[in-house]
Length: 401
Image (cartoon, rainbow, N blue to C red; front, side, top):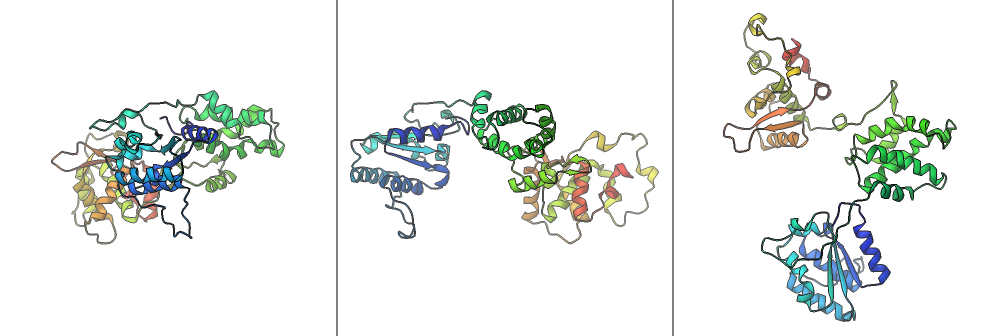
């Protein structure tokens, strides 16, 4: 076991191929049922591949673990492997926890059950303690793959240098990249992706003739804002690589680098936008002002009586205040253009806004007086959302009276 991109699969695969041991490697993510897992192991052991000629059907049909043990023995004898140890490698083995409860204990005692020479290797990103069934099972041998150190990552990433540039030049670029990203990201795959994505921008001054490969300071000044921009979205993949490259080519408007934060690119359904606007108004407007803002015939209310005498602090400086669900829906129905019936779709969109961290659930789930929320979006973001639905939010904010 070990974190992602620490060489677990590659080391095991290379070792088995080099020593020419009979083996089967199955990615458990691809097998959403036990049957698919069993049949994929048997197919690989038999050398059977799914194709149009066999109508993409498996070599043998297998539904239960007992059937799998019997069919495995049959295939081993057919392939004349009974004198060799067959290695079954289950990659992403943590997925087994979501399958049948007999799978993990069965694979741990597979050699004993099948009565053939067989070894099962589990590759996982989580520790064995997270696997162990409550009913107890055979304890496996545990081997930990530690994370790569900064020096290891430097050596591995430096091997990817393009042929048109020297190895020293690319190594200096990797050193700069790790100096920025190593504290927040140690995933080799992600770092390799970032290195490939930002390298054209790094070598741009060299290609234009504005700097030499040894001019580290000038190259750093050129790449620094782009690496900071990339660090805002590390792991997120909010935009594709081609979109990122287009942004890199046209990245300067009005003399500053454009940002690509999550909120700048979020696209919400129509009613979710109004729900978010209603949540913002609920968080930053006192509840006593709802009558003035959202009732058509509220009568004449003098501003002197409407305002608190000693109220001097802006609600936006105090931060968002919690509000009940009933108040959110009441404001939502008053600001949305068309008549909307309170369906499950509306409530599910509130849950989606919480999942996007635009709203925060306040209090415990077992409270009796209904859920309460806070709006975590800032004013600039809400204004941008309100413009897309032609809603003038400033007219409804108490602080802007």
